[in-house]
Each structure stands twice: as C-alpha cells, then as structure tokens.
Amino acid sequence: MTAHICAEPGEIAETILMPGDPLRAKWAAETYLENPKLVNDVRGMLGFTGTWRGHRVTIHGSGMGMPSLSIYANELITQYGAKTLIRIGSTGAMQAHVKMRDVILAQTASSISTPSAGVFREVNFAPCADFGLLRAAYDAAQSKGSDVHVGGIYSSDVFYDERPDLNEMMTRHGILAVEMEAAELYNLAARHGCRALAVLTVSDYLQTGEELPAAERQTSFGDMVEIALEAAFA
Image (cartoon, rainbow, N blue to C red; front, side):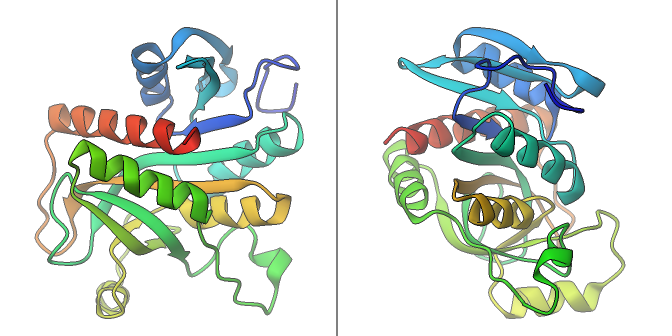
C-alpha cells in the first residue's frame, strides 16, 4: 500500500487505463471488464481491476491536472509495477478541422510546466507517446470508423486560463487540442521505461465555446475505452 493507494500486492494489473474522473473509472470498469474488483478508494479516487478478453486490466482515476496524475502514476509504476498506462479523457479542440467527438491520439504533449520540471531543470524535454501503442490505437480507431487525428497536444497546468495569446500561438503551431495531464504521464513513462499514450475525445471547442452534451460525452468516452483496450493488447 502507498499513501494514496490501498491496493494489496498483486491487485493492480500491469496495464492501466487512467480517466481523470474516478466515477468514470467505475463506469468503465463495470461496463468493459469482467469481474471488476474495487482495489482502491483512498480519498475517493477509485481503482478497479478485472479482465478484458482474458487480459488483466486496472482502471484507475488520476484526478484533474498533472500534479494529481503524477502522484498516482508514480505510485502505480514504482510500487505496483505498472508497465502500460493509457490516459482516456476529454479535450478541447484548437484546430478548425478537428470536430466534436473526434478522437485525438497525442503523439507529443507540449507544456509550460510539469511536476517534472524540477528534474529536467534547464532541459526542454520533449515528452512523446509510445509508438507501438500509438500505431495500435490508430488502427483500432480506424477499424471502428472513428474520425481520428494524430499529432501534438498542449497539456495546460490551469483550467481557467486568461492567455488568448497562448492559445493563438498553440493553434498557429498546429497543436490539435488542450487537456491537463498527458505531458506528465509521458515524462514519467520515459523516466521509468514504461509505455504511455493519451487517447482523447473532443468535448468542446475553444474558439467557439461549443460543448458536447453530457449524454454524448458518455457515449464518446466508451469509444475511447475500447480503443485504449485494443491498443494495449494489440
């Protein structure tokens, strides 16, 4: 056990899907896993382990933002032996050709700052996805008929930002979308020799303020879970 995860040794799988919302972790586990078992509920951050097509999988919440994800990912990797971590979550589109409910596979994740900044110091480390996972997720998305985009995203360390100039610069440099966790996940995976990927669904559009209704978010979230599971065990 750790300070934030109460799972016993052996209760966490090597493959972990990480939505931000713990209730989404519960929904995904109960919907897609066989015999899901609650293995963590410390501070309300739920984690479940079950099987998918015979493969052991843990679905564990990460919370919102890179500091929260960093805590859970660090402990899952260093204390529980996680080897593959896939973030599944929503994102805000930054390009006109990216539409609502499209799937984005984050090849790279830019940021202003991450919890790993103190480790890298003066180095502008370029965190990126595992290519094997990225390729498998792309194939899975295409086989499902999903509209999928592969490219760079921006991991912000604030939700209510007041930097329209920054958004404009990211858009001008081809950044597909913005979210709040992937850059640190990729940093940690690189540091510990793990595989990582962010599979995201567009839920809103920064330039217009358009948002996906709650019911449609749930359906789109299911597509992400399927793509992530198929990629993990391709």
